[in-house]
Length: 304
Image (cartoon, rainbow, N blue to C red; front, top):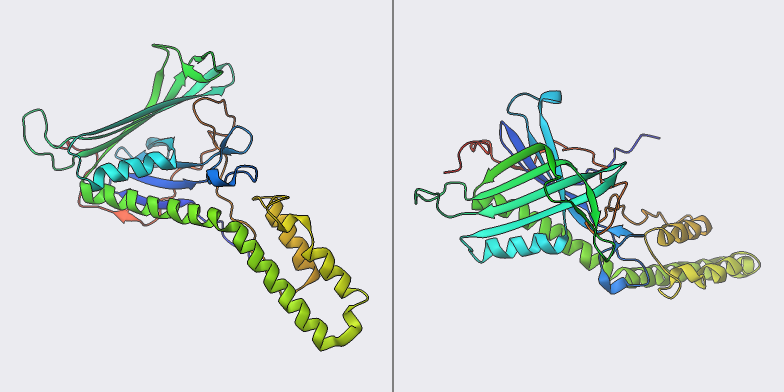
């Protein structure tokens, strides 16, 4: 059987001949106990996030390139998109996170700004700037158990700054918001999808019973009753990313007519800045796929 290529998590990418800025899907569904949260936001189930990756290959590719990343909450992506759509001339967004890394801490720093004019009063050709830095710092804890890095302990190892115009940044944010909206709609209706699947399964079993007569009553009908009443198909007993997949596979074992795609894998669970994480740094790097190309602009030149 042919190997199925792994699906990319890249949503969109802005590229030039010297660098790129891409948005990756790291969304995770809320657990069964809090379905209306929609997004995962706990230490055990992980955190639902959008990953921003910036790559500078102006000095060469491979080992000569500089790659950095930072994770952003989906609500903050929508907030930035709203700022852009409403035409705010000045925007400032910043966030720093530190994660336990052995005896020290790994730090991600993100700054997104928009300035209509430069210091000379001239209108900016590329008003948006996205600055992402990665480095190390000393982990400190507040009284609630949250993490932060001690003052003056941040040692920035790598940094990439990308400049964009309104149209290019709109492409990145609009496509990312479309993915977030689709994800949220799927989570809101996932219980209804399970009920529809169960209804379809019962309908097919009923047709099979009518066609084969009593031949299914001794074995097939019992299997059908066991499946249709199985707890994994109801919200009461949970239909999460793991439970739903396993229960559907059980069903497909009884009826070969079904082909299950399983629940989607929305990426590695990342932890917010108030929690330590060992897999926050599970970063695959940029995908270099076609997306929101803009080869006629130099993202690393003076934005004025």
